Length: 65
Image (cartoon, rainbow, N blue to C red; front, side):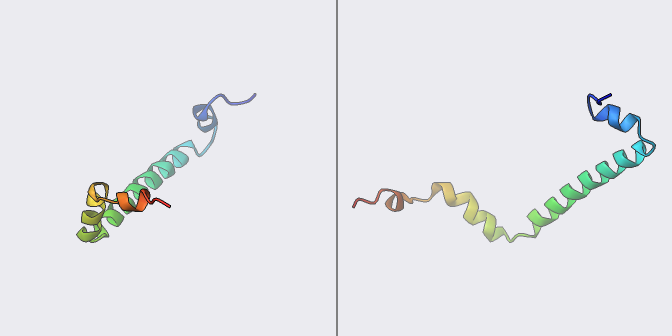
């Protein structure tokens, strides 16, 4: 029998609770690391990035040969 979805796979496993807990911990750790990474960047980096769409770079794209 081929399982139809992940629920079928995990419900037949002895360690289903362990796998679900491990997946939740990995998911939470990923977002904690992501938040730490974002807040560790200097504010200058974000100021430069937020103004990037507003900068006039037409000279670079409209070069005439």
